[in-house]
Length: 372
Image (cartoon, rainbow, N blue to C red; front, top):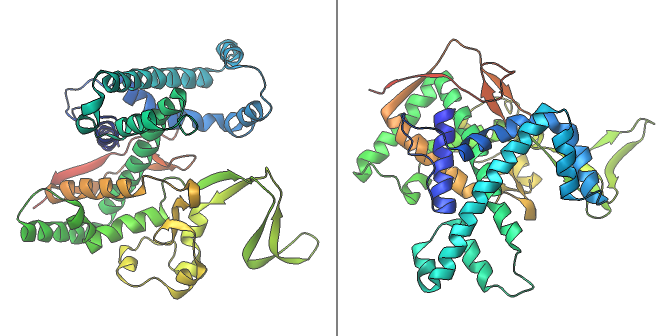
């Protein structure tokens, strides 16, 4: 888990911010930004009431000021909340440094900035500098994107990769078949370096990724708030407590809705009686007709893993390609086996593995050997 998280983070650092935090080597002292980002999800798991109810109420009714709440947090005898405060402080300080470096580089040499800085943050800062006053984002919102990019792109991708390696270790036949496909593609292309087109035309690699993201989405439950009154149609009628059968539900404005992504991804009526089984080969055949007719609103393969609509994951293509590149490189060289240790998967927030369910830092021990 540690190595996959470090790799995912470094990919985000270089492509997202044009910097490097980790040389991906053994003799390395973990950067404090990396350490804080890794702990953010485990720490917030113990603050669900605060996140879901207290903080939204503070914002909704504009209770107090940030300065007042900061003082209140400092005096509360709540260790986990203090830990979260320190994590956020670290992430903000380093994000502020990165943002100011990019902004100063733009001021110093605007003419060549676009050619020299091609990372996502530089593109955003450059575009924002050219925007009209009414479209321009304030600096604090641009700054906030650094932490958003990092957290969203690192933990979810490393979680999905951990799940894939865990499954491949348990299913040696699937691992062998995937390795054979990777080696065949390398032999035909006569190069070790993967590219987008080659990775996009590997059916079994794609099937393993899709099936894992279907059955083991890194985030299985999300909340959304209705911005206006709406009527929610149901796929089949349900019976109310007074015995009535209803085909739709009225959703008043400001209602919080809990959305089960896992439920949509595993419904037997749509995916078949084996919907709860991990079977990559299901993606080598056309999808069931009922699934196609259901018109699942997700942006990816009839799945809700990356959500849908205007709030869907904007980086799902990036995440897909990142997973495929790492699998393409590692599976050719190494073979993965399970250990005798039992692995616990914590599904609150972003799913993470651990040997001890009470510890904060995730871990996934696997046995690794050179592949023949």
